[in-house]
Length: 235
Image (cartoon, rainbow, N blue to C red; front, top):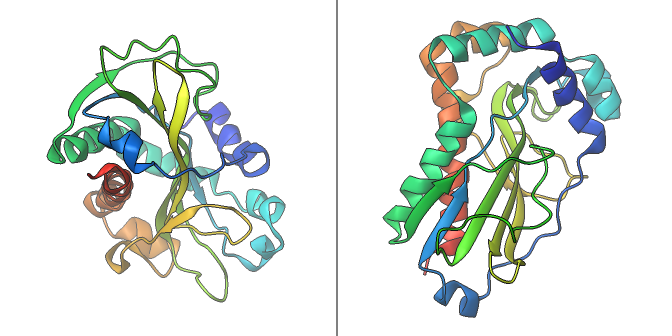
């Protein structure tokens, strides 16, 4: 079952997470990158939240009240039964997309104080001779609604912090925040839409779509996120 601590962490993110400032990768920096070390993406907090309910329209506090803990536990059990790890899936998708562009890719595990925030320094990261270190952090993921009038349907979602850094100088070369599925005009981020095939009128239809579809929606999010990041590094 989903641990209470994970659930509370997913709720607390609504109040505390601050997105990093966006920074595009300069052509001269991109030209010098041929090998990338990916820091393995940690398994992020999972949430199933009715953010699109009328009570949630007032903002994050109302949305937190509408958190559907039992549904998050149900989804977590489905993912565990199918051995689906969101962090592993995104890590593998990133590797596949970057290698498809011709980059040499290495994956490492790094211990960090807070797995919902980008690292403050990359000086101590063992980049194995790579030209850049890719740090991708998932603030939260799962299924949510957006707005009770304009976008009330359930859809897969993820909020992502990204940084690409030079491990030698510790200089950040590229930085961005992505919001897949769920969008909020008061949050600065690049929006990625969830396709209609993974959008559902209500929670009953969402969970009634079957385990394969629920997981496929989450896989679409990791693939879309990895593809977007790869496109920023495409030469």
